[in-house]
Amino acid sequence: MNPPPTPRPPRALVFDVFGTVVDWRASIIREGQMLSAAKGLQVDWPAFADAWRAGYAPAMDRTRGAGSAWADIDTLHRQILDTLLPRFGLSALSEDERVQLNRVWHRLMPWPDAVGGLNRLRGRYVIGTLSNGNISLLVDMAKHAGLPWDCVLSAELARRYKPDPEVYLMAARLLGCAPGELMMVAAHVDDLRDAQACGLRTAYVHRALEFGPDAPPRPARPEGFDLIAGDFVDLARQLGA
Image 1 (tube, rainbow, N blue to C red):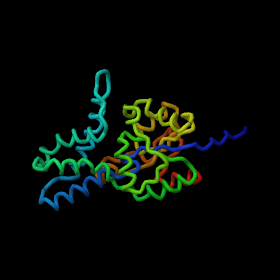
Image 2 (image 1 turned 180 degrees about the vertical axis):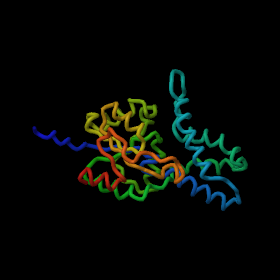
Image 3 (image 1 turned 45 degrees about the horizontal axis):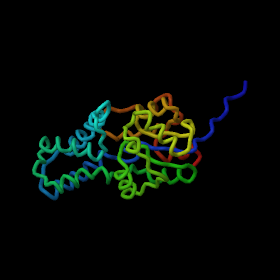
Image 4 (image 1 turned 120 degrees about the vertical axis):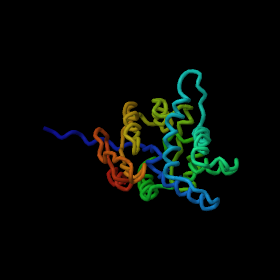
């Protein structure tokens, strides 16, 4: 019996960003601690970071459905932030300080393997973002963190948010790929399942510390994806880059 044919490599890879490429939680905690030091504040910044992120999906959900007004992630992050300031004793922040804090999402730090792994992958593949973050946020983040994208694709281009199928199919269309020629890379099983349902190939990258060292563990090797990698360097190795 002949072995099954080896699948052809993808033509391009697109990456979820928050949590997959950058460490949003540690970045927010770090900047919060700097703000506390500058202003003499006492804030539980890990709890603040978790609460800010917890508002992300509900905020996006409010933009869906007939008659809903779409808003970009910067706007949604600011709406969530404004609800958190009183809860965490930050109501005295000036408007300029609130704007600066909201823009922490533009300054997120990459995981240690991200830049090196992406540069390896870029040597062989077209690589880009496929994030719910707005374009200006993703461009600022790339400049800040040294992320070597060939292109920056955002759900903003479709004025919808993942997991809407149009976001995944838009990426394939804009890159001139059939869905099966495009690989979605993410640390989130749900994102990959939704991409898979649209015909994209999938690579899971395990980020054990995305929600901090005390968060419930997630499976390191979930089933059903084309590739499973420990980090971007491992992904590059598996893809021959």
